[in-house]
Image 1 (cartoon, helix red, strand yellow):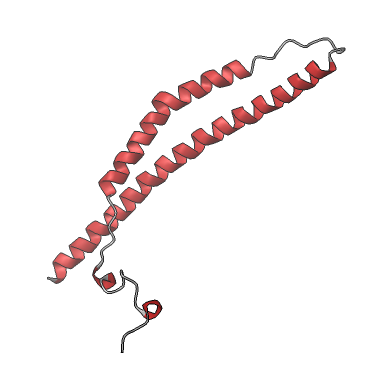
Image 2 (cartoon, rainbow, N blue to C red):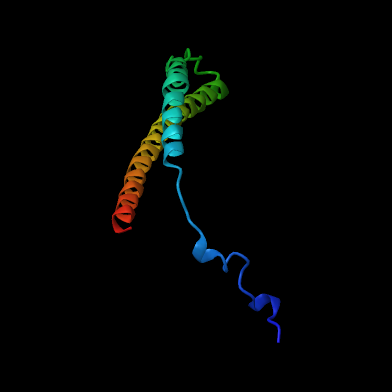
Length: 122
């Protein structure tokens, strides 16, 4: 009697016990270093230039131009939000690079420890 197609095991299941999940620790460290370098060399200087350009206040228009006053008020608020987002993006990217470095170091150490233990048993 054949199994219904819905009752069959998934295609990946028979070989599941033989799978090995490995992380490329050197690759993680390389990505972290490249990300940190890109952040320091390209992103942060440009972000600081944009921030400096946006902190210059616009000339105040005459109060009679209500639409222009309202537009400039909203424009200034959006500039402040953008500046905050740019700063947070830089901080988060730096944190991502630091996390990749830590993960690479910790898991690399764990793999070396496991390899040493395996060699000691054999």
